Length: 209
Image (tube, rainbow, N blue to C red; front, side):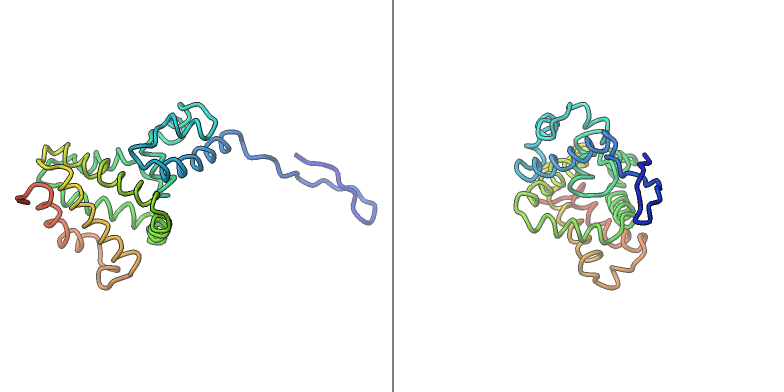
């Protein structure tokens, strides 16, 4: 919107007024802020779509409208990367149990390399600064992502296998993106898949007794 402004020399000119953000962007931002608080206070499992929407003061349907699901909101609000966790689960489990290790490593690296290593660093800093945020991330990784993978594959002892996988993936992410441990930090995806995937595969489908 242009508004008339009189300058020091008496001339009138038009200046564009900075308007408010569109209402939809306000709703989205309110949901992100509310989600970070809810996940930090109650963990991934304890926070619900309704509680997040109530804190944001919006209809619960807006979560699905803007983020697709609670998973999608968590990914963008806490992980701060634009990927849908359900899509990741579908990709990882698409080729059957025997390819889980390969698919997990490949999908993890493709998403985080694409988002930029600095995003992973920011995630680590944000969750290690607050115990509540760390709990939310742990709940999400173990109970949603990796437990979902083990259950989809029909593995026994899904929680133990899920936590073993999470430890491997988090350690790899720390070494590659945060510490910059060479040659892992600059290795190509296929090299890392060849080295790490067999360990993940054993955690998922091998004997862990």
